[in-house]
Amino acid sequence: MLTVTHAALAIASTSLLTGTADPWVLGAAAIASQLPDVDTSGSVTGRVFHPISRWLEARYPHRSMTHSFSVTGLIAVLLLPLMFWGASQFYWALLIGYWMGWFGDVFTKSGVAAFFPHQARLVIPANPRLRLSSGSKSESGVLAVLVLIGVVSININSSGGIMRSFDQMLGSQSGAIEIYQRESARHQVFATIEGRHTITQQAVAGQFEIIGTIAGDLLVKDSQNRLYRAGGSPEAQIAPETVHAAIGAAINLVTNELFLDSQPVGQMIRSLHLPQNSYLSGQLLIDALDRESVQLHGSKQYFQPIQSFNGVTVELESASPAQTLAVLGDIYATGSLVVRSIYVQS
Image (cartoon, rainbow, N blue to C red):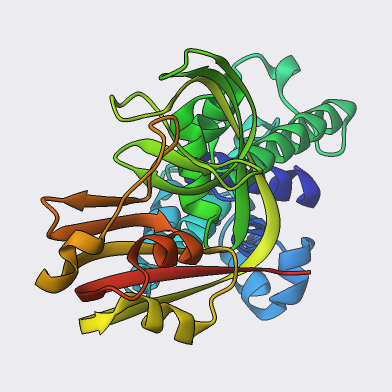
């Protein structure tokens, strides 16, 4: 096989078997696919490692020792430190790349001594007329197929994998949740939702910004900054039929944790000068003198990010600074809040 065919086979196999689209990992596989041909000085690898190539060439026939399961197993052992150094993807890329680098020659007319030191040749298929000749039109056809497989596999893997791509094609909520969880630290994520409103039973069709997840449901925001819980739970305001997620603008995500000890909530929030796209989550214990001052109002048609329990505890779930100030104002409370601030990059 030609050098380019070995590389294409290694890249396609590594992408399919490991689920990666990392160009460095795939490049390592392509380089490893050239190493079996170090047993001949006429190859690219043989010219690069000429002393080693001449030594091997004088002792072993071409496509014998370096084209075998035994040497591949030895390489698997020698590369094991990569697993302990946290480079498992490179471990598998190098191993698969080396293996595919010689296994492709099984389909050529001369085959390989795959079971070295036994000299019997492994040749596939049995019919000699169907075997490949190096540089032939048949090999060019095989190369084209391998390139196509590699491109499709890399594209799928860069989108999150086969199952995630399948979920997106079907418009499943689980696929949208996975995309949000993967991308929300770096990008805005939007969802185009079609379904119905669980309270009004009206049809819902539009784009929402995903700002969080709650127990398997999506927490989304419409263009008027109203929140909805979308999913299959009894608490959801939107029962979606299809959900298609899309990645938006790049963001800088800043997360802070606030601790209050009988302090006014409003004073703490005002001092932070939070941007509009900020969300507060956590629990606060309201001081006894202020419990009667907490007034929660809101329609059941929308998700209410601030809820009170027994007039003692207030729970916030992705509440905006404006909503928090409107409800809690200068009420004194004890507890902690996690603040997510999103800065959209221009």
